[in-house]
Image (cartoon, rainbow, N blue to C red; front, side, top):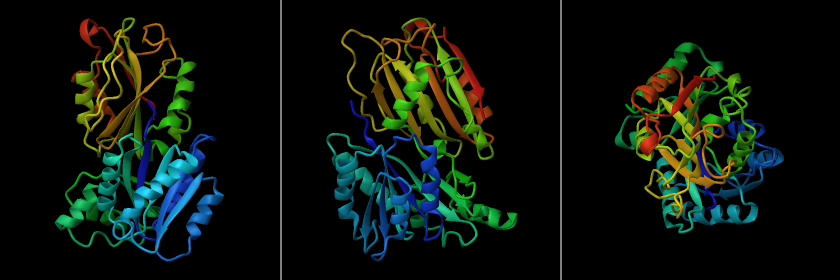
Length: 370
C-alpha cells in the first residue's frame, strides 16, 4: 500500500510570514525530501515562488489571477495532479493568498480526496499565520468567522517579538472571542518546529524505520533538535512492550485517538503492531488482515483529531518481541503544560494496552523528553 500524499494548507494575510515559515521548515527536512508548493497569488508576478524555488523546494505551481477558494477552485485538482505526476512529492503545501478562506479550501481538498478512488491525498492540517504586529483581530464573531476559525487546526503567531506583552495578549483575546479551542504556537522569528507543523509521511517514515532498525533504549530517536524549542511544546516518548508476538488493543487505541482536544495535543506519531488492520479517522481500513493471523507493523500519523495508518515492513521479521521491537513506540507532541495530564491519562485510563490474553501484561514507559 502506497501512502497518500499529505497536503498542508497554509493561510494568512500578505506579509504575515507564510513564505518565511516554509523556508525555515526546509532545513529541518531530510536531504532527499521532496516538498512541493502550490501558491495562490493575485496578479502575475511571483516573487515568493522564485525565492522558494531557489531554496530547494522540489516543485512550485502557481494559481494566478484570482482567489483559490472562489473562482480558482476548479483548477485545484488539476494543479495537485500535475505536481504529483511531475515530481512525486512527499508533501504538498498549499499557500493561499491572504483573502482565501481556509474552510472553503479545506472542503474542496476533502472533496478531491473523496473523489480520488486510489487514495492519492490526505489533508494533514490547516495552519493560519498571524502577524501580531499588524493584526487587528477578527472583525466579528459571526457564524462565518467561527466557521473559518473552526477549520484552522493551528494558529502560528508571528512577529510577536516586535510588540509588547499587552498587544500579544490582545491578539489572544481576539482569538478567544471566537469561543473555539484553536491551538496556537509562537514562532521563533518565523520558525516553528517541523513536528508541530507536519505529520508523518512516506519520506519521514523511511527515516524513522532506519532509526528504529538500530534503536536502543527508548526508541533510538535523536531528540537533540527537538529540545532546541522547548518553550511552546512538550514532547512525550511512549513505549509499550509485551510478550512475544503481542499486538495493540485497537479499541483502546481508537478511544485514545478520539480523546485529545486539539489545543492540548498537536501530534501523535509512531509505530505499532496489530493483528487486524486499523481504521483511520474516516473509517477506512489500512489494508487487509493477514490470512495467517500474523501481526502487521503500522505507522500512525495523528494530527488535530485526524489520523491515518500506513502498513510498513517490520525491521524484525514481522512480529513484536519483548527482546526486540516494542508493540508501540510513539512520540506525542503536547501543548505547553499538557504533557503531565496526558501522561497520567494514558496510564490511569488504560489508553494503551495489549490485545487478548496479553492484556495487562505490557510494560508501559512514558517519558517527557522536552
